[in-house]
Length: 105
Image (cartoon, rainbow, N blue to C red; front, side, top):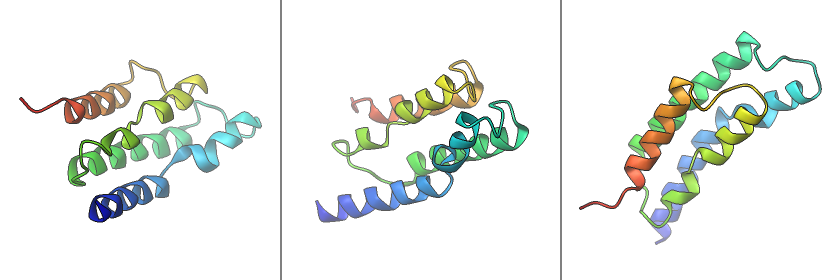
């Protein structure tokens, strides 16, 4: 179990390195940056790509996988107007997570 937890920590650490919520979303909330700012969009697109890559490349056990659910982070970005649920990257990331979360038959 310790190895699984270490793998989870590495996955989360990778995600935190590119997470737009930590720094840039605060700038949107303070009015220093617009939700439609191209720089914010680029960082957000990059983060979604990293998130997809982490989900595909890190072997996380089924019981720990819910901790990598992107939906809560995406919800914050949707609520801030940075993304929408029908954005291709948002939809692809959610579909990937759902596919990985589905029980293997």
